[in-house]
Length: 327
Image (cartoon, rainbow, N blue to C red; front, top):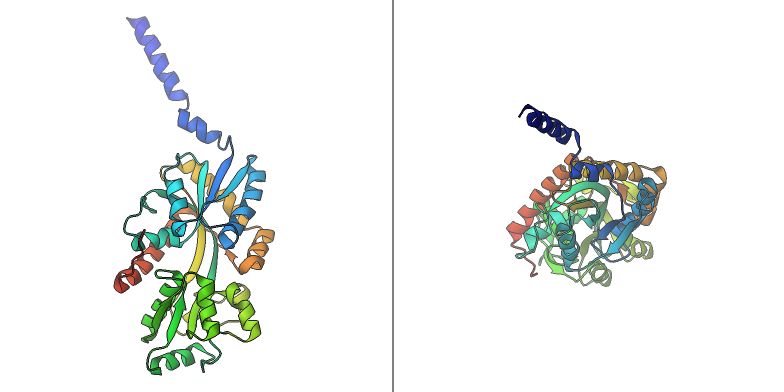
């Protein structure tokens, strides 16, 4: 009996000393290629960021990092793919903020919950939009534009990239802060929205800076202000809306997620690796040159706080305006 108890005790001690299979898997991570699903088509800031990071991450961790574009349904296709993947750190999502902080308030029947089914790893890049107007608008500053819009009868029309787009939400946030009315005219994409202002069909648009650069040079658009909380990047000379309306901020950003339940040691490792990469001077410079983006460094906890803050901001606008988009 004593002998049996002795062997049982020894076995129990050995069990305690042996690492679990999960711990072994984490310590060996990564032991095979990592797949990064990008929620937009090839081209554009999120895709450029994904490919820039993939090259360096592969070199740092000693495993291939494969970028796969999975556009569709405003990012929901990619989001669902990653949300339903094994939570082992080998399938990641790189997506614009709208997928997590806007879509769940717009779409009635999402097949996944972007907050509950995805684990934030790291913010990657951020950028601001610009308020641009047709040259016939007699305003060169934001206060002048607001005064013009306030007096316009009927209200001036502004263009957006579609219902629920950040182009619309940023303008609606400005309307609330300034106490003015404008007519929303949605288009299918940012380029058609900008084209409508250039043609004079609408008078104003909040859009990405790079998409307006050629028109500004040609004199067919005039920039009024940036949507960031402060001036930065290639638009550092452009006044921020926040300078007239303190607290206003309209930033677009992209981040990296894993399926919910991914072990914390893995998400911490990925966060550290990614932050190191996007803090490199060469990478920061590449982001700026590719479209004026800035590296957006955060811990997983800080990234989660950004998601929570922006979700609350957009939810209020979407609910107040009763904006919905069919799946």
